[in-house]
Amino acid sequence: MRTSTRGFDSESTRAEAEQQPLQAKWRETATAAHYAQSARGRWRSPRAAGKDVRLVTSLLQRNKLTVDRALDVPCGTGRLSEALLPSSGQILSFDSSRSMLLQARITGAQLPQPPRLAQARAEALPLAADSCDLVLCCRLLHHLNDGEELESIVGELVRVSSAWIIASYWDCASLEAITKGLRRPRPGGTRRARPVAVIDQAFAAAGALVCDRIHARRLLSPQTFVLAHKEKSATRG
Image (tube, rainbow, N blue to C red; front, side):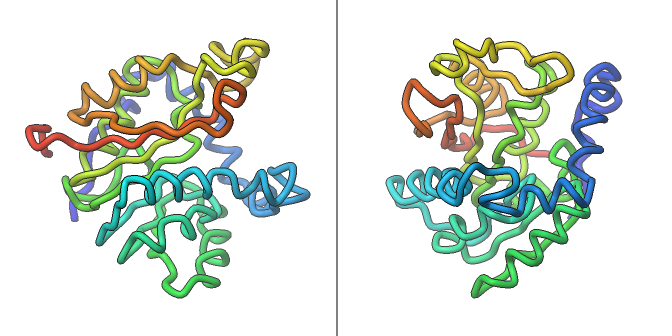
């Protein structure tokens, strides 16, 4: 396997500076433990903790997807492995945070087939082009800046996929995004909501077509997943 050099680190020092506090937060052991707790930690309740699992499962089932190898990046504590397992022969779980990977190992140990874990960043995945049939990227895109930063990450997800990409983003047309002004990050924050067209364009620029979309709560919650299919003519690195 070769390491891709695609990314925004050397091209946008401003974007890198904005991401450093966020990356540092995710690498903290306490943060990983916080995310691993369904009821008392990151999530309001076990049902809230399972929301993304249900959405990803729905996308996979209604599109009848079965793949040999799936990549989950950033995998966080590994909570989405249970959604991928029924449809995937093998799961690769990548995250830049060692603390998150330690939690993901605990999560994976409870599964019939634990994922293969590796420390890696989404903007420079240590995989050759077309290495995975499906790439899953949850709760990362809404932390990125519009333009080059978003397009670079989406481009890397599409590069390593041979067919399918599932990614979450925040939809600015939701009531929560409108009432809380989520089109722009709050002071000291990084999360932002976007129009559908921005996400679709980012995937199109990378050589993938968005073919399905599922909302956590239509018109209420910003959390949304898209399913994109890589076009055969997409550039391969």
